[in-house]
Amino acid sequence: MVEFFQKGGPLIGIILLCSIIGLGVFFERLIFLHRASIHVGDFLRGLSILIQRRNFAEAIQECACTPGPVARVVHSALLRHEAEREELRAIIQDAGQLEVPRLEKNLPLLSTIAYGAPLVGLLGTVLGLLQAFQTMTLHGGYTTTTELAAGAYQSLLCAAAGIAVSIPAFVAYQFLSSRVNTLMHDMERAGIETVQLLRATSSPRSLSPQEPTSIPATIAITAEETSNLSQTNNEKGAQRSCLL
Image 1: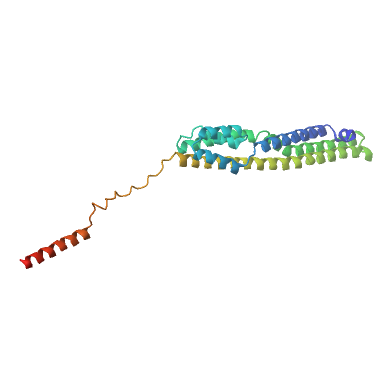
Image 2: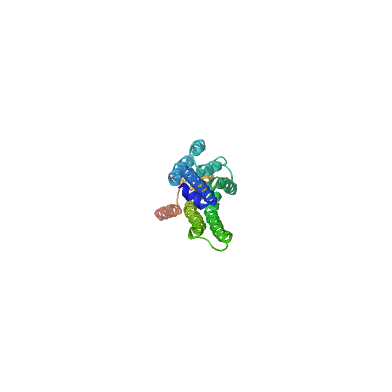
């Protein structure tokens, strides 16, 4: 390994440093994003029960005890649960924007390593070829194969090391970016559902139309009964007149 770095030139150390930094960033972000991830469906189902019961204090406490950006976004909305829909959306949007830099922390550094390591390797390749031609020039155009191989070996080592660092760094960056996008989608979903729950809970219940006041059966007389009663009285009056 020591011989590898000696023949690779000074740029091998820079590439090695990039690999160590990239590895540290990857594991740090992986642990952070794993801790920030929660089961959004279960979390929202539990909160919906508390919100429907208008138990906002317990819902706020539940969000405060739950780690991750999703819980913090919902927590900011519950603190202003009496606000209007548009205001709640603005609160959730602002809270989500504050969480994005935390999620994307150190990802630009990993991206820089993924794109920069091959360039450092390419620089080492050019320096190795320059060294080989410089050796040839110092000997008046005549040199041994061993002296030429030293420069070529340095150039190939730098190129291979740069590519070997770049590929894992790029894959790690894409993987972590997908995890960040998933968390951002969870924040948006939690925010939308929280606003809908708060508005549905705070809106006044629709009053059922009042039933018409019923008239007691002993008092209410329909038109048909009235006509029948008057017809009966007329018949009795005609019978009496005939008897007289």
